[in-house]
Length: 413
Image (cartoon, rainbow, N blue to C red; front, side, top):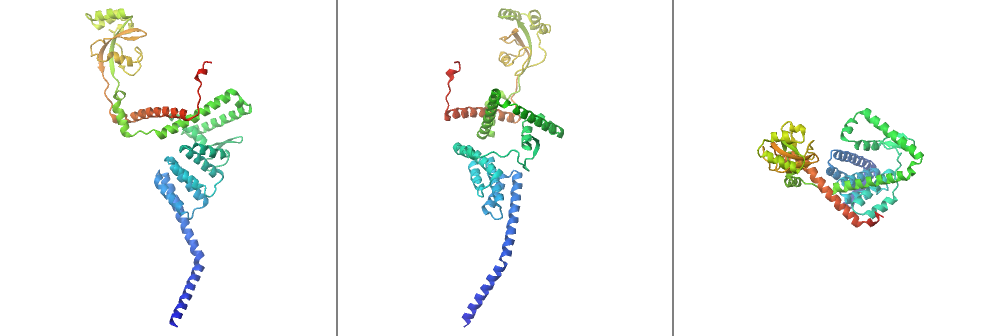
C-alpha cells in the first residue's frame, strides 16, 4: 500500500510540474528570446566597433560566432553579417573563404540591391581564384542596378534630367585630383564649385547625345580606346600590387648593391679654355706646359665671358644636374674622374660649342647617404623595378595563354 501511495504521489507531482511548465512556458520562452536578441545586438555592435578600429580578425571571430549560433538573427541580419565577413576576407585576399561566406549569404534568397552586391562580389572572387569561366557565366546572369535608386549610404547630390550624381561619384572625382588641388578642395565653396562643374559637364554631355555625336566613328573609336586603356590600367595595377612584395631586408640589400644611386652629388669649381677643334686644343695644351691657365685662357679661349676671368666658370658644377655651359653633366663626371685640384683634365669635353679644356679649381666628391635617410626612396625604387619585371612577365604569360595572332608583315602593306 505504501509503495502505491508513493507512486501515486510521484505521478501527481510530475503532472503538477508538467502543468506548471506548460503554463509558464510561453513567458519563459519570451524572456529567453529577448535575452538572446539583446546579446545578438551587443555582439553586432561590438563587431562593428572592432571593424571600425581596423581589428578585422577580431571582428571576424565575433561575426562568425553570431552566424554559427544564428539565434536572434533576422534573415536580413544573417545576410548582412555574411556579407561583412566576405568583404573582410576579400580585403585580406582570402578569396576562397570570401566565396564561401557569399554562398552562405544566399541562404535566405536575397534580392534587389543585396542580391546584386552578392553576385558582384562572387564574380570578383571567382576571377581572383582563376575561375574565369564561372565568373563569366555568373556575370551573364546579373543585371545592373538602377542608377537612380535612392540610397542612404550614397545620397544624390544633383539630378540632371533622369540621371543622378551621387556622393560616391563626386568623391571618386576628388580622389583623382593632385595632392595640392585636393587640399584646396577641402574648402566648402570650392567643393560646391566642383559639383557645379560636374553638373555642367553632364548637361553638355546630354546635349551631345541629343545631337547624336556618340555615333560619330571618331567618338566611338576614342571611347573604345579609353575604356580599354582604363580597364587594362586597373587590371595591371591590381595584379602588380597583389603580387609584388618588398621586405625590409630586400630594401637594405638593394641599397648596398647600388651605392652609386645613394650618394651626395659631386661638386666642382672649374676653369675652361674653349677650343675650336683638335688642332687648337693641342696648341692650347702645348702652351699650358710653360704658361699659366689664366694667361692661356685670356688669349686662346673662344668663350669671351670666361676668358676675361682667366677661364673661371661662375658657380658650382653639380654632377647630375644640367649646366648652362656643359648641358648633361654625366659625361663631365667621366672626364674629371681622377683629376686632382689644380690639374688639367687629360681629355677635353666635346659639346656643340667646341672642345672644353678643363682645370679643376676645387672638387668635393659625393659621400654615401646613410641608409636611414634614403630607405623610403630605396623601397620605391626597388618596388618600381620589381613591378616592371612582374608586368613584363604578366604580359608574356597573358599573350601565351590567349589565342593571339599577330601579322607583323602586314604593317607596311
